[in-house]
Length: 455
Image 1 (cartoon, one colour):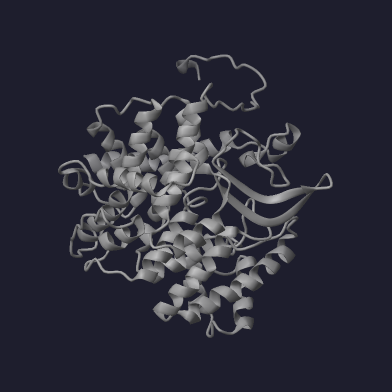
Image 2 (image 1 turned 30 degrees about the vertical axis):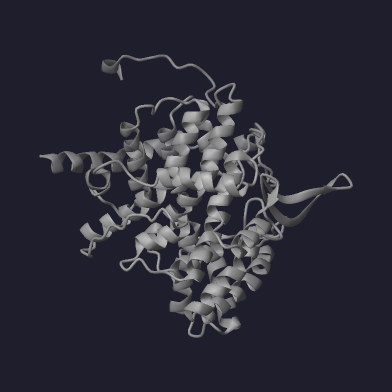
């Protein structure tokens, strides 16, 4: 009986969805006539200003002599260049994720004693409620780990007797707990899916409080808990680079919008996760990997630049890969000449490729990085420059680390929860009104109701 009900609902939706398309379609010309910017971005790529932040700066253009010009990309966390943060954190004796997390949350780099206290606070939260893994994560496992994480985050509210308290001290406490718990929610969710759906062995490793976030991710993911220093350093760099990217990206804006309504931390973070999982936001690195696999299938010699160029031409002509005409990992809404995250990440990628014996693959990526921007500029008549973005390399790194594709976007979330937390706190401190943008209506006149029996 239940199956029949589902079949009828599916058939009904198939038949009547055309009404949604007919009545919901709005003429493109109306957007121009009414000066409405689709996606909150104008034709020149400028975003509509919806807030002020002191957390980060994302820059791809500058004003010179009163005129706007495109420049090398720049990303600052609380005023510090992300390139300097990644390079300096990676040369010390420790790992950088925790240090940069402190910076984003509190606005200053920590002293040694502040760092130790902060790490202690994170370690004290590095556990899940009793039987949570069994009763929540292991139930109804799915290959959609972002949905699994969102479910787990919402359920954690039931274990928090102050879940609805939105005072700054309590939200900070909740944020620290979620930053610590996100790696477990993601990796345990993957192990549950891999066991129940893929019939593989099940193992649950608890995080080691003496290790960094990057080290614990690799430790919990692998059956033998082993990893190399280079692997952990490269993953640590990836986490720092994905930690924050201004208030205008979709998931961070979602965080601020839901926060402004007065909602609780768990609902806010579940909403942010739902935004990040979208293919236009957090899934770009997966598309890069799929495109590269397709390239290797259809190009006889990936080291031959002419053959690679021909393949990319077909991609742009909608004749190869997914026929959408996009070279994934190349291009960005803000950056034009360079993405600073990709610039600094490249050296880490090369170091890992050398350790893994995958320099041929690195050479292929480097070749595409050089030729693709010019090809796109020529074809699309781009008004601004085109460059590779951080997602161009991150999927390659995750594959070299043996991280399953299902975890690519959750790894992004493990990093970005820090930025979301910082923006939620900033919104709470300055919150005055609910974020409620205006929408123009195209309804021209009021309709008269006709009783059902007369229609």
